[in-house]
Length: 311
Image (tube, rainbow, N blue to C red; front, side, top):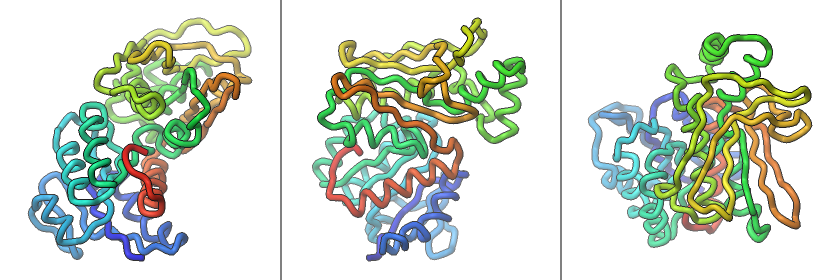
């Protein structure tokens, strides 16, 4: 089965996705192929670069079944506009971009249901860690009461390096040299990135509108004392009994717990499921390749599973 894909984004995640897509598709008997790549002001089709054309025209010409987004979350409404256009054209949307999910969640959900297509957001909620999959489907019927997670790999890495004796600036610089932290790590250290991911997970869990969900964040600016046997973590939390509120704060977590046991740039999410107990997922590479693999998983899910709406 041939599955044409239009990819938006030429950065590290987009390039890794384009490299992986054919190889991973063949394992499942699918001929996944990127037939066009869209940059900011130009696009490549049939191996040639040319001017950017309107997305609906490109989707119709290529017969694309999937529109994959690996563009920065920079507040530009182009990501939202193109995702809506793709759904209206009958393509599934697979995205690593967060900004338009926050601002246009309801619009995208309604467009996906009308079109009978899905919007897959694993790469936007945890990269290679399948936190979104658990929230949306694997825990369906478990009656989740609360969720808590270390959702930013940079924050975990930096806090561990400080615990090992580095100063905060040196730990951030080391994370940047290792390719873990962005050139501007402010959203990681402020808690904004973790809050964004938990707003999306809460929307999958409980149907909260991300645009209406308030985030309260504590930045990593000072390092408090931590009891023996604990590790300091940036923890994002939300509870079903307090709808529309997500909090991110520094928390001393027991080293034996799913959050305290993390090392380096790892991530983890713990779901409190009432009588079913706690369910946790951890690991998953915080890297462009990890995010690209999450997009591959979502692409396979979009074309192999008969689902609609957010996944």
